[in-house]
Amino acid sequence: MPQITSITYQEKNKNRCNVFVDGEFFCGMSLETVMKNRLKVGQDVDKEWLKEVVKESEKSDALNKAAEYISKRLKTKREIKDYLLKKGYSEDIAWYCVDKLKEYGYVDDVGYSKRYIESTSKTQGKRLVEYKLMMKGVKKDYIGAAFDEVDVQSKENARVLAEKHIKNKEVNKENLAKTYRYLIGRGFSYEDASYAIDKIKGDN
Image (cartoon, rainbow, N blue to C red; front, side, top):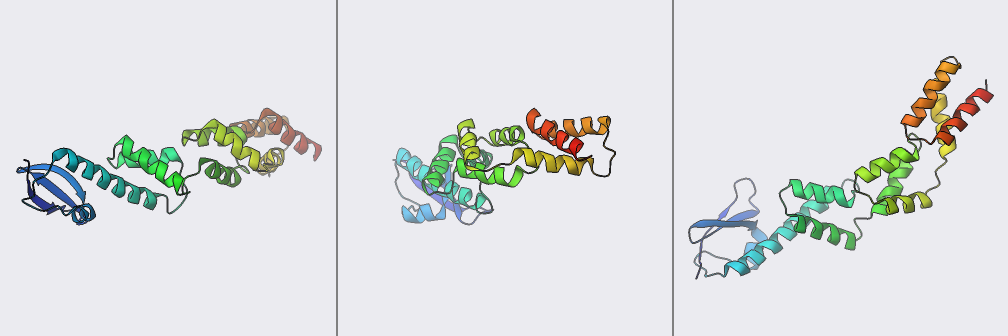
């Protein structure tokens, strides 16, 4: 039967160990997992059982890293998954962590979207906000649900932004056209941009 021939601390992380079976490297795992399963040199082991032990170790380690990653600010499900993949964890482990964090209430793409909309809608139109959230992996339905719950004054936001853009400039056809294009580039709708330009015209 296969036998554990060596258990050594990893040089860069003393909380993780390298486990050797029959003189060959078999896997790395957390020190906590080694102690919890009472693994020791000279112990006969079933490799399939040891693989399951490793999987549980990876889950625990990845979940700790994911929790640390989201401790500074909220992240979307895709951001967490991509972060763990870059750290070398498998997709199964990454999604396991995402599901666990969601279960614990630490991952909420609708809630994330609401906060994102609240913090960006004064300077970015709906189209741009939607695009950025989708690039973060948020589903369109979730984004729509978030917009339904946030009172976004898109026309007024466009007007305020337009006034800042044209401030200290002559209000003429050329500058109004530039301001209009600026608003469109910031993701505001044609309707909102037109409203903002009409307001500026009316004030001059």
